[in-house]
Length: 525
Image 1: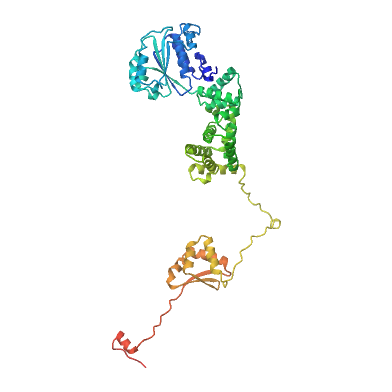
Image 2: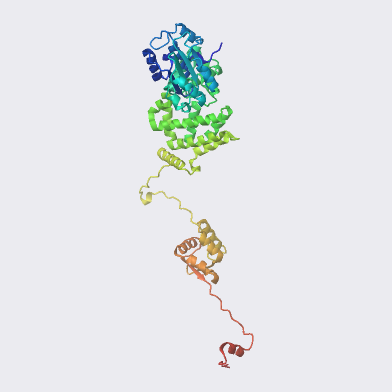
C-alpha cells in the first residue's frame, strides 16, 4: 500500500528529528534525569516537526527502559507505539474537537492509570482552535494533573492561547528548517524510495518548502510521480507551475539591460509554457530581493539566502549589473502587480506594464526612478557609451583639415511682402510669444531706412509699442529682424500721430462765435 513520503520518513527517535537540535537535546536530558514536565507546548510554523517530536516524546515517556533518553524500541509499550496501538497515548485534533464537551470527555479518562506504559500521554494538536470555555475546563487539570499524566499541546498560533494556559506549560519554539538541511533529507528520502534525482532539482524542492519539511516532502512526492521516478528540473517546474532558476536569471538579465524586446519574448515563452503568472511574479519579486541581499552582503549571501555557492556567485554578478535602485523598484512594482492579479481580466498586461516601468525608469517621476536613471547613466559613462571628446590639438594653419562651413541662411529684402510674416514665424519658433502677440495685434513693419527697421503702431495701440521698447524685448527684436532682413543694424518702434479733425462751420460764424465768446467779438474782413 502506498504511503506518503512524509509519513514513511516520520522520525521515530530524537536523533532523526532534523533542524531542531536544541529542543531534542533538552528533552532527552529531561528524560535521562527523570525531570520531565507535566505539560509541554510546541509552537512553530507548519511542517517543522512539532507533531513528530510529540510522538517521539510520548513514546519515550511510555517506554519501560529508555536508552540514553531514546525509546528502546523492544518493550511492549514501544512495539505498541510502532503499531500505533498503544492505548495510553491519545491524540486529539483540536480543530474538530474544540467544544467544551469534547474536552470534558478527555478529562473523564485522566484519573485512570496507564494500562501498558509508564505514563499516560495526551497530544492535543492545533490547540489554538479550542474555545475559551473548553480551555477553562482544561485549566485545573492542566495545572495539577495526576503524576502518571503528561499533556503535549501543539499549535501554529500560540498568540491565541490564554495566558493562563501558556503559564502552565513548558514552551518550545520550533524554527524553520534551513534549506540545506531539507535538501539533505530529501536526498535520503529519494534513496529510501529508490528514486533518482538531480541535485539542482532537489534544491528547488527544498526552497519551495519554505522551511517546512512536510511541505517539501509532499512536493517531492508529486515530483517523483511527475518524473516517473526521476526528480528533474522539468518535473519540479511542472509540479510547482514555476519557471525555474535559469529562466529567472534570464528574465532578470533582460530587465537589468532594459531590453524590452527580450522581456516580451520571455513573457510570451512563459505564457506558451502554461506557467502561472502570479507564481512567476512572486518568484521574480523574491529573485529581486535576493539580488538586493547579494548586493548588500557580498559572498556571505549564500548563508543568508540558503543557496548553493554556485547560485551565490551568479547572484553577485547579476546584482552588480542590476543595481540596487532598479532591483528595489522592481520589487515594489511586482508586488503591486501581484496584489492586483486576482482582479485583473488580463493578467499578462499587468506583468508587461510592470516590466515596462522597470526597464524604462524615465517613465516615472519617483525618487527611486530618478536614482535608477542616474545609475544607468553612470554605467553608460563607465562603459564608454557616452565618450567625452578630447580637446582639439593645436595644428598649424596650413596643416588643418578644411571643413565646409555651415550654410548661412539667405536674408530677404525689406521690400519683400513676406517680411512681416517671416518675423512673426521666427518669434514663434523662438517661443517669444509676448512679442509675437504684441506685433500681431498692432505693429506694422513699414521698411528699412538708413539701416533702421521701422515698426509703426496705431495711436490706440501705444501700450503695445511700449512693450516692444523694453530693453530685453527690443534686443530680441533687433536680433531676429537683423537675421532675416538685409541691411538692418537698428530697430525703431513708432506711434502714428493722431490726425487733427477739421469741423466745417454749419451756420452764421459771427452768431456762433458770440454764443461761445460773448458779445465782444469783432468780425474782421
